[in-house]
Image 1 (tube, rainbow, N blue to C red):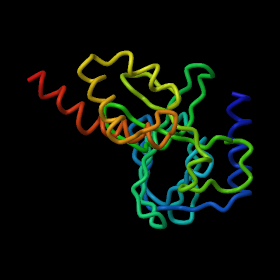
Image 2 (cartoon, one colour):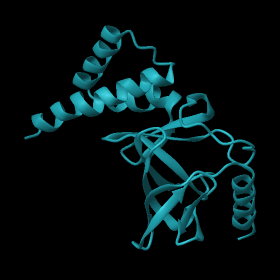
Image 3 (cartoon, rainbow, N blue to C red):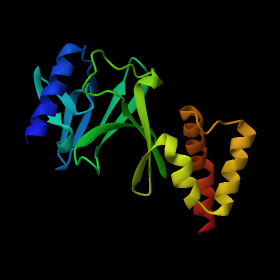
Image 4 (spheres, helix red, strand yellow):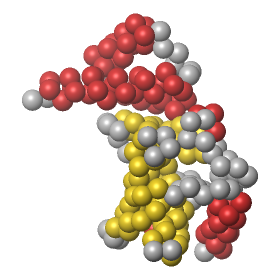
Length: 194
């Protein structure tokens, strides 16, 4: 409880120091309740919801998912709350790629954040991949997931890497490979099972 209180205070302090941006959207709580209004995910540890000039704070452990439209960047943003297997604490992650393999991200320095994180500055984020219930940092995708795919999948993905001149040590290239897997390879595997 003390850890949660400390994290909430740090999150609130960080939110009060940085400019908070709100967007029309919804928060789905773990109870199934849907809360709509102006949404902010400034700290990635909690969600702020403003409705009728009343502000509510929902810590990450109470949140299931969040969705809103970011007018400034012209994108729909989706967030999920995930519990760390190590610390058992919840944190909000932004979904970047949907599919069988999901790409997630969160700011590198949550508690020490003195200025607002830019959605477009990809260097400010840590990237992760969720696949078949496991979550690993994106730089471990090759070692973790590639070994579990069958030969047809491995061959098709390695051909794509060669054809597109992808560098599997570059985050952007790994994200392109995951998108390709979700759109092309995964579809072929599902059709083959019919």
